[in-house]
Image (cartoon, rainbow over all chains, first blue to last red; front, side, top):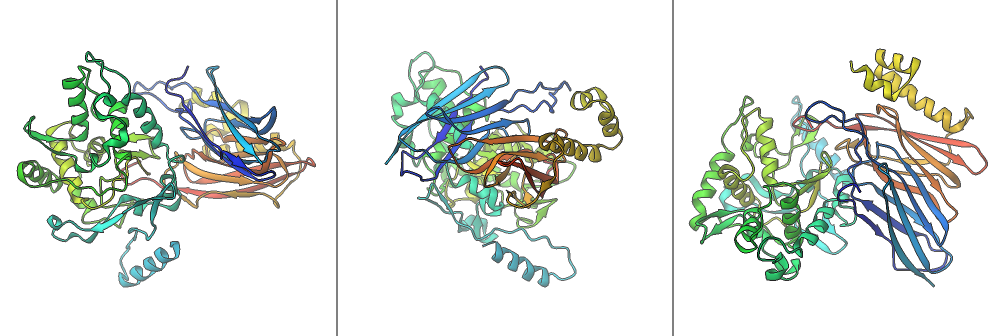
Length: 109
Length: 286
Length: 139
């Protein structure tokens, strides 16, 4: 597993039906672009998170393809509308095959 | 707010007719973190400056563009808080032979509120001025029987960021008299010493020319109240002495190492130039 | 000229062109990426918003926002980067609006481009120039 990768998400605890819910996510990750060189002049191999998805009770909210031009510690902000109470599942896919997930429940009334 | 800045630049441009004045002084924005933590980004200049920075000192936050400023206004948006979170794990981790953690003695990190604004400060037992990093390392080696953190490397910077984060909003308040005076004076002398092939002192940029452009960048007063700083440039938390090292290196000089007596003295002196500004660390700068 | 590194990014004629005229070639790469995304379809300019700072204080971390009501997906490109691809936002049925914000890397002053694919299969595009400042001490 890539070192020190820690996902963070911010979802309101409650929302009303039909309300647009603002969600923010940030994951600590170097996002090594493959464009940089080390002190010895060798190219540092690319190592990034290449996909990020958000689902709610099996239905998709957003599915993002990331390229090396996304900054270190990838940050996303977007909005969801959910019909019922339930759980958001956040998934980040690393080039090295690792998958990081986080979950956050919301009460909809 | 943007409007004010633009009008101000227009006025000054008119006043300095014929010169190529690039005005990039502090804006009028106010910093409130998480909607409730008010940060004093300006304060009356400390008496010891004797007017060198005018009547008012400003945090570097006031010299930044709105996009950069806003990242610091919310802890979720501020990637510097990732370091704080890592340090919260270090805080409770038993390290060394004593099987003690920071928490064993100090309780919750929040109980350390008010500590960081007084550093660097005189340590009677050690008989020297100590920075917060030195104090952390003293705890580790003397109390916990653990290895010290490498100076201004990630663990050390994360831990200082945790300690500044719980003191955010409190005024920087370092003592410059008594036993600390000698070190403070040394830092003062270093601040005004021209280094390197460029023959630049700290004062040449941050005292004589703050509010001007340096290439395409705004020169701030070089205050240290925001350290550790998450820089958009290197996308990590940076310790204050690591920054000094870089500044002096950029004058094309043989620079000083973080943890050296020179940079310890300089850290105390630069902190004293910001006495009265709120602690902001971990702040966000370019 | 480090030809082998470039070759990993581009192939054939594009790589040759890039070796001769790097900036023009990077722009051509983003044109290629748009053509691939749209399948060569005509691209309109209404109904998409791209928000980015006029001046970015550091190219390593530039905040951007895209929104295109009714879009299926929005692709973002940085025309002046060695690899112009930035990312693509695909919106699911639970997206409240077709909006996203992120932070991107720009290798210098250049155009940032957003292209949205709409539900009816049409495409719209917006672009904005972001000036990337050079820091005071070479950064």
